[in-house]
Length: 119
Image (tube, rainbow, N blue to C red; front, side, top):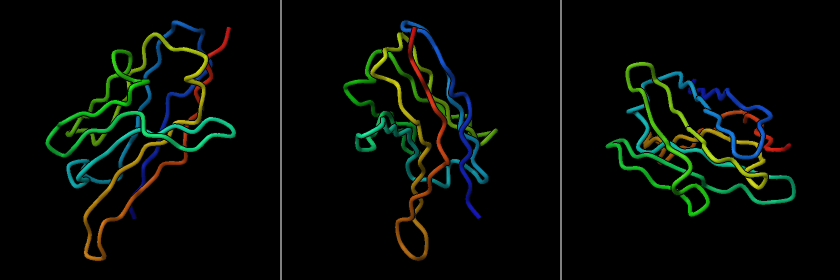
């Protein structure tokens, strides 16, 4: 069974930094793409950053220049380093991975970790 488990969410002041972690139950390279989404109350879930199997990153406009997505293949971990945090970054952050399986493209999600940016 594929599991993604996030950690690292916390309450942080504006301008602060936080690193989110996502532990995968299998080789992260078995996902064709992995990423971080977030969902604020009353809003739709949105993509923050992603990274392909080959290491190509993507960042949303909100994340560019402040967030960095990375991966540790040996530890089967995905990370999101978030700097210069703003109150509008407050949301539940979800780890996502997509695999191409016998039944087709299959998406997997973690349970989410809460990030609150407030003074």
